[in-house]
Length: 365
Image (tube, rainbow, N blue to C red; front, side, top):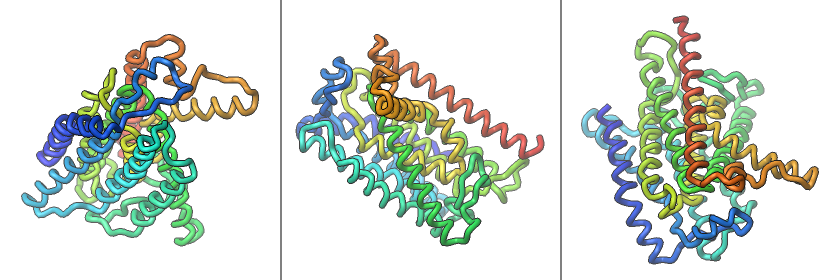
């Protein structure tokens, strides 16, 4: 527990202290956000607001987990787990891609950065590296960092190993690419109002902190009563999830309306990559759909809007993603954000109830 507390405290301190320093640096470099012209007109006043805030979020998670890992190494001789390093790789690599995108925007002084093709190629390369390493690297606990299959909770309901190991690796790489692309874009789409993505991500990662801690307490081989999980190094995953939640919490102090800084793609892609990797590492890829329910709604609203418009030349929503629809209906931005946080909290609570119910049913209690 001390290592968890250390991680939480360090992550909070890094964001609280580091964000204003970054704001001053971005102001000095004149790296402000460029606002899409077809969006709500009320957003035009945000033009020039410092961006690249995701740099601090990434740094807070890494330093928070790193401080915790250092404490455990000094006091117990424990070395960092490959599972933790892989999850952090997913976060930092996607964050790096987002940083390149953000930097391109501020350099070109427009709201478009990397091309769709360029971003896709980058995501494909990085997700493929993560997928292959997750299958082949050894772990401290003896359990693999990932399963070659699709899981709702724990055991795969569809295994990729039906056609041999080589095919399983290829199918797993495709599956991981889909998850990484889906979740990075989902959180990126949600990042459209002050504090919306940061607050929703904070709630989602708090949910994952609870799930991973429960898996740690009921890990196979520990002898605790009830169903046991074959998850690799869940305590490390708990600390990372808690650090991510706390990093978002600290960032909200400056990102809440009116925002003093935006996380940019550096933050949203990193959080999406981390969320996807957490779902893979905890064997909850399909439970994550409920846990990140708000992000799914935001993405589906965009898909529905584009698809319906292409078929009928008409729109379902006043504007997509759906948070802009409610803005154009007259809801104040703060009301949209707070209500969407509440929706995400309900999704997390539902996911936790399902997760616990699954454990009870498997335990026969």
